[in-house]
Image 1 (cartoon, rainbow, N blue to C red):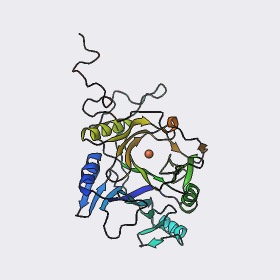
Image 2: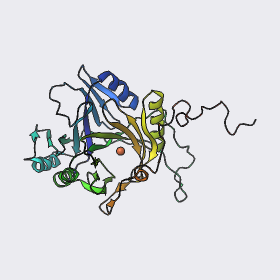
Image 3: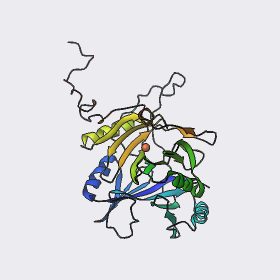
Image 4: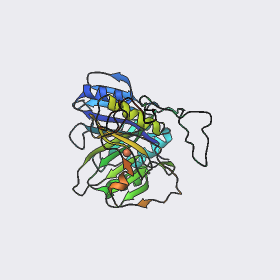
Length: 319
Ligand SMILES: [Fe+2]
């Protein structure tokens, strides 16, 4: 009886038109819209809703908009939903609409649970040839003109009481601690067998509460690069990336989002089981990124931003 990951998220937005351009460039499919709300889907049907701040019925934010207002977690079937219905009863802000149950987490965020609307999908992904494994044979590795994210893979929040919020997700919702910065950060996955984290909670020395980022899973590392360069060509601002996280091993690229916080393309995170022993780390720049490119890669020159543009000649050209 565990959660399957994120099924839907809702942003409270202050500039719907700018968000529409951003999330379309990001690679999500707009499936419905009206004057108040944009409804997007990723490849597997995970929903990203961008709602105007004053949309009736929107749960309160944990910080001023734009930010994430609600996270809906997925379960496999009605029996599992029932399990969580009982687990959440009595929690602050408990709601039960039949199809959805939910509450307000100790950080003040609206969380909901529903039977998943995501579709199982199979996509072609790059195989990587290593010394030991030469499984890509007679096949070139892919390059992507832009990304089409598969789903929302994780969300990250600043919280004021890390111990309390971490305990809530572990005890009420069955999350498992993957790794931690003791007293400063908890990497949590939905189930014993899962990707490294579905939820990362951070407590700053001067506590603040809010959204840090929403991360979108893409097929392989080449889609992180291709997607990022497309966003750069569209004029969106890189926060950091591409780069690699030592914790989780993922290749990442972060952009500043008009929906609030940052959004991330990532791929190649660690897959964990109950045989994994959580590690403890002390925060530091080399732990956040083994390496990273500040300002991103310019999508047109395909060079580090502000690096010299190509002259039209390649290094391999003869004089
Ligand atoms: Fe992330």
